[in-house]
Length: 147
Ligand SMILES: CC(C)(COP(=O)(O)OP(=O)(O)OC[C@H]1O[C@@H](n2cnc3c(N)ncnc32)[C@H](O)[C@@H]1OP(=O)(O)O)[C@@H](O)C(=O)NCCC(=O)NCCS
Image 1 (cartoon, rainbow, N blue to C red):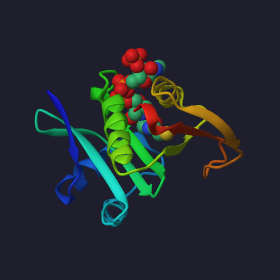
Image 2 (image 1 turned 60 degrees about the vertical axis):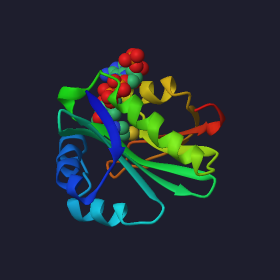
Image 3 (image 1 turned 135 degrees about the horizontal axis):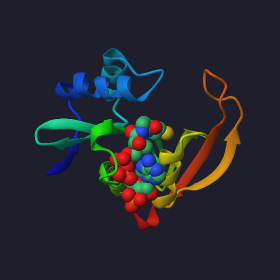
Image 4 (image 1 turned 90 degrees about the vertical axis):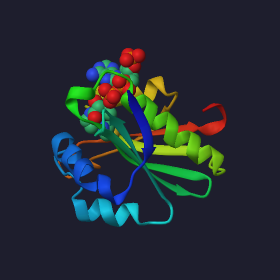
């Protein structure tokens, strides 16, 4: 059974492997360590049978929440893991008094865009050539009253 819990330093190696698997410009263990150490960071992992299969990172800055990343290892996709991670981190943020969640996503990332649609995010604009390879980013927002 998959559970969602707070990420600790012991999870960093596993999360860095997921980053490498999922992204062209993955966060290193050092970057994950530094981010996790920030007092406004709320990082969660999904654990299935003792194995970290996904994670979500959020920075809670007062009323605003910035999702830094969400990723699930390929063999665990399509089972609601990302939905659980996102719902959980938004619940934490709402309990801490945040009211709006923001994130960016590559225009070509159909699975992620479908995930954000399902979670009730709205696309609010485009950042042209936002990524290093110059792909555009879609900006998404969600108000937290009904998480
Ligand atoms: C995007 C990602 C996090 C989704 O993780 P996941 O655990 O497979 O997603 P879930 O199973 O929770 O899916 C929830 C919803 O998202 C949508 N979705 C997820 N994967 C999808 C796909 N391949 N195609 C279409 N819709 C998809 C669906 O609406 C799905 O709901 P449904 O199963 O009821 O149809 C995963 O594909 C991933 O890690 N991709 C690489 C990293 C990445 O791109 N992260 C996002 C950066 S912006």
